[in-house]
Image (cartoon, rainbow, N blue to C red; front, top):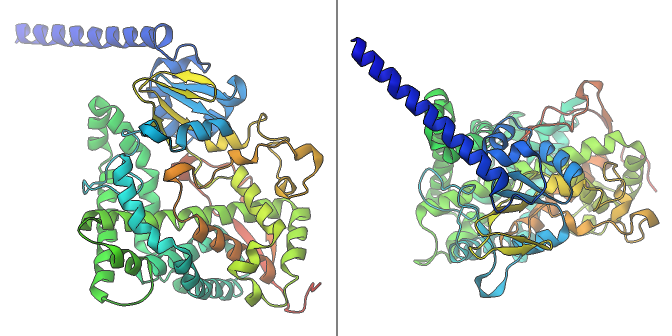
Length: 496
């Protein structure tokens, strides 16, 4: 027994010192010999990936990297093999398509396959695979489809306004989510989630929020399969169970829509009409529909919440928007076309995208083996690179008064001090061949909902909100309730 104990103790001691020695060697290499050693950044971030993952897992990564860029400049080494950029040129160099196959591919570590093993329009890595998904899905987002969808969207916005008129104080974030999930459920799967009718989340929607929040856990486990990944499997089984439940709910929704065999014009009908043997497998189709539901609802509701908060914090801007929107005799006149032609409304939306991007985290790419020139810097091969949207939107080298809410910077005749603002650095829908396919739908939905809210209500923020916009981010913002006092307007009130 003594011999066995001594032998075991000795083996553990050797293993411990071996691990410590390996870690020490890795730290020394990362600091003094790594190809990225000349790029600026915090020293602790250069030593090991663990510090990046701890920040990511705590929800602080977005603000941490903004702080690092403020200290170190437009390009920062935020992990041993990762560079973060913040300029318009970097957007082009990293995300634009380049002939001859020299464009940068998605980072396979970040874009993990779904639990079903099949790809989807976001997770697929290769150009050809992505093009196959995008070509088929694009039919659901064509101009013709958008025109057919307007009346359906209007019905849900009508219901949102009706429900809010019965409630003097609401958590507007929740109600925006009710509306956007009902809209995308109707458009994508031919069946609303009935959240607006009941004033509560559908069970699947609740699972979506938790599932997205725990994506960072999956990435942590993938980067450190042992021992961290093993411990996560033991200590956090709820994470994996939630992912399974989320996937199962999505599959059931798609199967239910398929069983209806309806000619109703929705996303599924457009996609299935053009699907063939070269199209999508059943698992891929289900994954894509799941992505569409999440991407087409949560991000839209997030921007609406952020814009509402910023307007309530800035009464002068709110009054200007009220004057523009309430020029219309009825809110029925606030259509996709008419709201697209309101300059101040669109400036409010663009400035809200800048200060509160719905997708605040970066979308990483990997440089080719021969390296790449990014924003004037030679970046070695196999390096993770990305633009951090939140940091880029608030960088002093991109914007004058970057922390201020100034919609006027987006107007054609903007004030002189904002003429040199790098407005193209704000890319809320991404850039290049991988840019969000639903941009036009999202913008029309955002403009219509926000304009009709302003036309129908006087908005007043309630004190319990605090500094609402200071949030943690787990892939998406972890939004607390945004409490708003709503006072319905008389149809004849404030007419111009």
